[in-house]
Length: 280
Image (tube, rainbow, N blue to C red; front, side):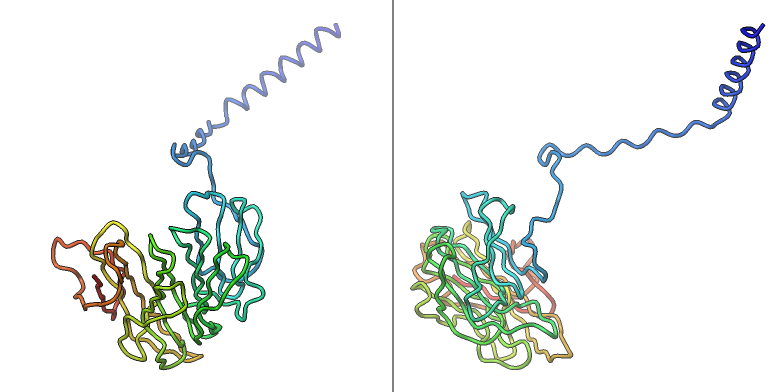
């Protein structure tokens, strides 16, 4: 008798559960996540450091050394990683400024570095730079090769000669300055020559090297001025240097209209109210 009652109760409970399950609407199957592309696999972006605050103005690697990277900070100097970003060490603590606008590695000699001080991302509270620094031992020691007060947006080194480098100098962020334009050295920083200059309110903030063309295109420079309470957009510039067939790349420049003629190819960066120059 007890077995019959227990069996009857089990059947009633089972029927109740089945009826409840059948009454619930079916849930749609979850969307399958997109498969990662074969080129990237399962790689995701993640923070690598160094664990300091502030803006990063430039990051560069070293050709042929996939684990070596340099990072330049607006108010944190220069840092280096030799472990693909896992560990970082400071390289610039003993220098007179920690505001860095750019760092460039010489393609022909990775032990040669150029650092342009002074962040060129113009705001009301930027710190002034103190010139250009050069290292010939991959950042272990530095020599100040150009002294100036102002912002340097970009350094670029000749692809075949580590002694030839260009600096896009924005100059003072808060008023007229004679130290503006594009500067060039051909002797490893011992001497610098201003090879492009418009006026004391027109600065350059970017310059790029293009190895694949014989005639180089560019920088663009724009008028600017700022006060601690007013920070208009900074002028942009882009420039390239020619292969070593030219003995002194960047020696002369010519103005170029923008946009280029129909069908023409241009490697120049551009913003409103700027002008582009080309060098041969």
